[in-house]
Amino acid sequence: MTITFGRTDTSTLGRWWWTVDRWSIAALVLLVAVGALLTMAASPAVAERINVQSFHFVRRQFMFLAPALITMVAVSLLSPKQIRRMAVIGLIGTIVLLALVPVLGAEVKGAKRWLNLGGLSIQPSEFVKPMFAVVSGWMFASARIEEGFPGRLIATGLFGVVAALLLVQPDVGQTAILTAIWAVQFFLAGLSIGWVVGLGLAAPVGAMAAYYAFPHVHARIDKFMDPSGAGGYQVTTALNAFKNGGLFGKGPGEGRVKLSLPDAHTDFILAVGGEEFGIVLCLFILALFAFIVLRGFSRVLKEDNLFVVLSTAGLLVQFGLQAMVNMASTLRMMPAKGMTLPFISYGGSSMVALALGMGMVLALTRTRYGREGHDA
Picture 1: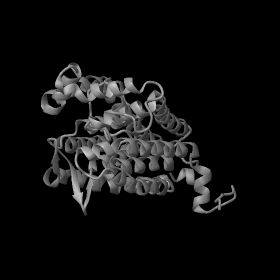
Picture 2: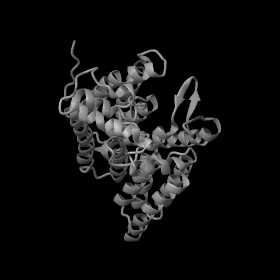
Picture 3: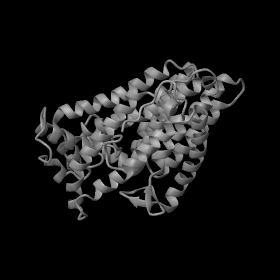
Picture 4: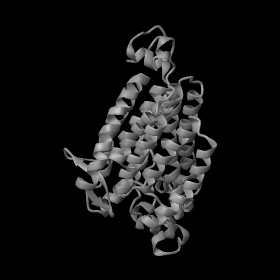
């Protein structure tokens, strides 16, 4: 039985179907499918190496797959006003959780980033980014629309609070993503030349401060500068995997990198894909990310609602930059950073949070007519 919606269908699902960007949904579903394929290829070897059942990670990833897709569709049904309200409540909640992480979080590899809630491990930093993008976009938009409203100050204050909580963990990578969201929105909202110069000077100063203040950042940059040392093992192994795979790969299940690479199912999952399915699959993944981001920007550029423009821009910057950081790290174009490849890497918090963020993008870029557009 096939479900179809006519253009005259005024039901919630009918209106959603004819106003949402179906091309973006198709690209996101393809990305999720590729992620499921690579999880099945990479994670059994990792599971056996740490003495758990072979399909431990596969089962856990698929357990989060349905809730993530349901979340994305459910959020995409909302109006911009409902997205804004949800983001405000969500930002307050995630800030509280971030504040609890240093106190109650479990330490893994020298950092506290996870909370155990009701038997589930949750990474609040993944959820705070889309919430911040929407609230910050609202504040910047309100500052332009309502004379005298201190929107820039509020957005900057929220950025400072969230960034400080992330650095306490410490999580410099997520702080950099958050900074990019805030800076892009500030720029699009009408950044003065003084701020442009100031932020341009602050960026290298901040990077240098992170290098000296955080030992793990110091170590990763040193490894990047000298990959021949013992610390460059993961990146060197990943690059060899791409060489071994060539154009079309060695075939499903034939890769060897997953047998020795510690983070083959998370940070370096692209290397597994490159070895087993070749550069062709890697380029297809890159094309999907580029299509989703560019398609989102092409739709939002038609908007005359500043809140929608700034919030969507922030969400797309988060999504695209996270993918770029993961891929660039794997290809040794930048220091390694423990950041998931959106919808591809193993990780429940990451998948659900990204689905939430992309659901927001789909909701904000839906075609709106008449009063619905003005009420956004």
